[in-house]
Image 1 (tube, rainbow, N blue to C red):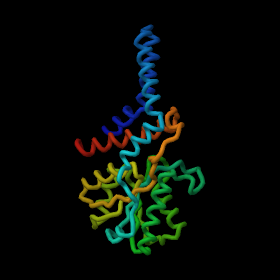
Image 2 (cartoon, one colour):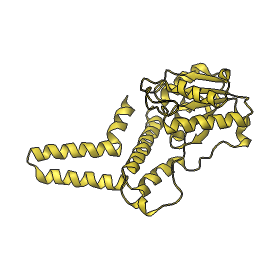
Image 3 (cartoon, helix red, strand yellow):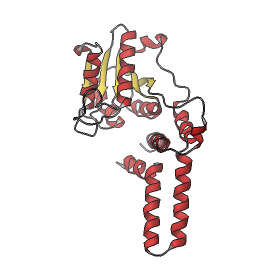
Length: 245
């Protein structure tokens, strides 16, 4: 709860919005100079964090040195844990009701499963915060891809990574697992799972950092601000679970 509160108010987009609201309040009080300073500050933050060059570097540091699972890693474990990555709502047709992150995580779990010739158990963790049961939808996607029903388990009570690790501790006897999630989320997830005595092998997918820049990366765009939000949320989570939890 504390982390969620911190993340909500310190990600760039929300912080900018709060500065804008405060500046409007100051204008209402006829404190124009202070309002002008806050507006300039808000615009400066927006201009920085909505640059592709900035958001890409923030994501890059989270994904640095991460590589997908290779064949030499396949003997590490028989358990593939997949963390759900969000959904879009129960009224949207399957599989479009899953976020891009959830689909890419499912595909990575399927890839590892196929590389292991089906000699593995896939466990999907995460119900999500909406009405849609994300773990169940991901399971249905994996079944469409040819994974047998008995090879898939779901843990559909958790709503965040910490709850996933806590609930999976009760389900899994083996501590060695493939941990499949988005590359930008791997570092935080690994820290959390280790706190519950797992020995996870990071299995990243959904890489977002680019290895080159274009002229558009030095102009502000809303999508870049969203990526900055994602990165800052991860950094805050890493600090919280590493030093305070």
